[in-house]
Structure formats: structure tokens, C-alpha cells
Amino acid sequence: GGPCVGQLLEQIGADVIKVEPLAGDLSRSIPPHFADGDSSFFISVNRGKRGVALDLKNERGMATLQDLVRHSDAVIYNFAPDVPARLGLDFESLLKVNPKICIGQMIGFHDRGIYANAPAFDIVVQAAAGIMSITGEREGKPVRMGYQIADLAGGLYLALGLVGALFGAARSGK
Image 1 (tube, rainbow, N blue to C red):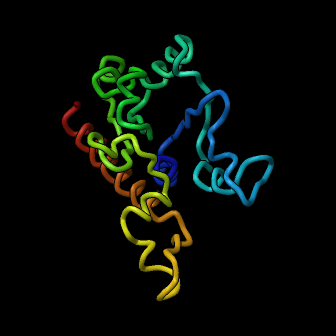
Image 2 (cartoon, one colour; image 1 turned 45 degrees about the vertical axis):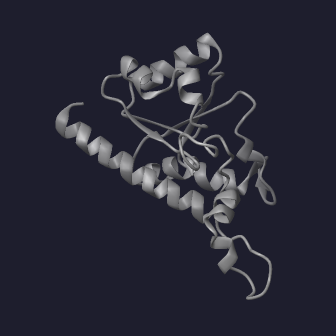
């Protein structure tokens, strides 16, 4: 879902800077199709974005990220619910860097409870939601939808929420 948010916002005119780990985003290696070493999935949800690789567990990497936040309108992240506070990227911490920042956090299943830190890859969300039980052949096994619909729907709703937050911030100054 997270990559879809940035892609949707880029398509409506936002200047999106994707921050990925020094080793690179894992989605760069999703098979089966590749171009210039990157997966077609990675390319499809990151076209038009600028990118930087940072080690957010390193003081210099965090300082660079804070400089980006200082000059940004919004931050989007797609971490397990406990990660932002651990890295110092939670709303309260980022407000200290930029009092006008809007935050869009993609959460898989929920921010607390037994599934809070469960992986929420598209196929997992499709299975948990039951949508795979109604695709494929009538008496056959559950089948994943042909497109990552959970990622797209989650990204669409978060993009809409973030645009609403930005609109509200423009009106209120907060």
C-alpha cells in the first residue's frame, strides 16, 4: 500500500522523495519481470519519484531525513506500528522538526492487538479479508486477484486522507 500512496500523490503533482534503506527497497527484486535490474512492480509504483537511500538507525541518516522533513508538507510511511516511535519518526517527534507536517501511516491490520505486527503483504490481506475465496473456479482453491488490489485500495484511501489533512492544514495553519 505504501508505494501506491506516493505514486498516486505524484500523479496529481506532488514532489515525492522515496527514502529506502542502503541495501535498497525489497520490492526492487519482486519477480517475474525486470528492467535495468529493478522489478516491474518497483518501477510501476515508483515512477516519477525522486529517491534517496538512508540508514535511519544512523545519526547522519536521521539528520538527513529530518532536513527533508523540515522542508516537506507530508511524510508517508509503511512500517509496523511500533517502528516509527522506535526510530523517532512518530507524529510527535516529526512535529518538533516541522510543526506543519502531515503524516500518512500505512498500517496493515491494526496498530495494536495480536495482528499489529503481522506482515500485511497484499496477498496476506486478500486472504485474511476472504476475497480470495470468491475468485478462481467455483469449487477450486482460493485464488489471489490478478492485481494487488489491497495495496491499491489501502494506498488510495491513505492518499485521500493525506490530501484531506493537507487541505485542513492549509486552512488552519496546523
